[in-house]
Image (cartoon, rainbow, N blue to C red; front, side, top):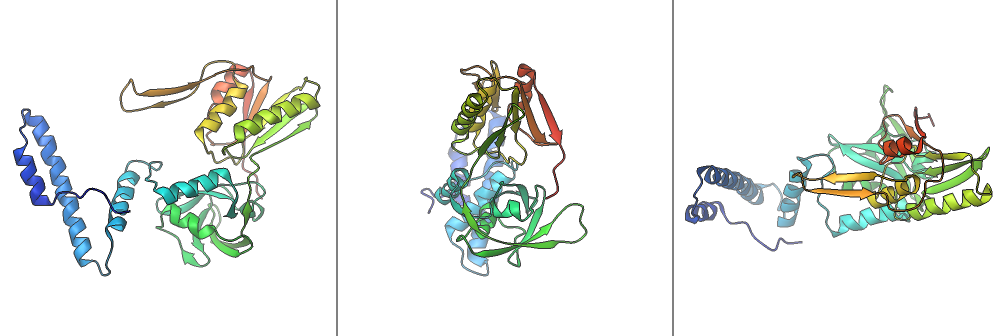
Length: 314
């Protein structure tokens, strides 16, 4: 995708700056600093374009600059093109060929957030906190998140070998498996000794609807009198915020569920309880150190509790 607008060359930028009337010296100083930084960027851009060992197109350079700019802000900000959005949608909707892993990039390394239950990665014993150093013998350190994910996906049935570095183990080790068609089952439920057990292993596009169905199923199976509920969020890597909010709404009777705060004091978006009555006493089970939206507010209002347990060895 070619950029629709071209940046002015350095000399033109300086000339444009000279033509702008400035009344405040502090404002002028800030503008001068901005243009100096743009000059530096254009200087590097032109040198790379002219002298890099291989020809490189504008899109590659500009996208790389944008990715680097957002990566410098925090680990969560990123730039998504159409292909990136399609890949994200496939992950949140399920139904793709791959391993069932949620991963992130940490200091250039591919870090496992969590394996999805009943997927090849989960069955092979991959754990949250593992680092993937090689895929089929190829070093993946320094790749972007999209590049690493693309290498792990592929046609169902095709083999793949991951080299894993696990904190606490002295040496890396290899794990081999076959890719499968990943069809997510984000919500599972059953009844144990009169208690409704709901496992939510990811927040994909239909989790809120499936959670409501689980509550209805438990209510019918217990004659409307369950002793309580256990909501199991272990190994849940997260997902769509609106789904997490809707699920939390099922267990709250009032109050704010989540808020997003911007740069200014007035820039706040809030999601609050909307409707319905909480089903009863609720216990949320999470891994120690995991972050679950709404859990603290939920158990405080419901009189329930949060049980944090160690990650089991698989």
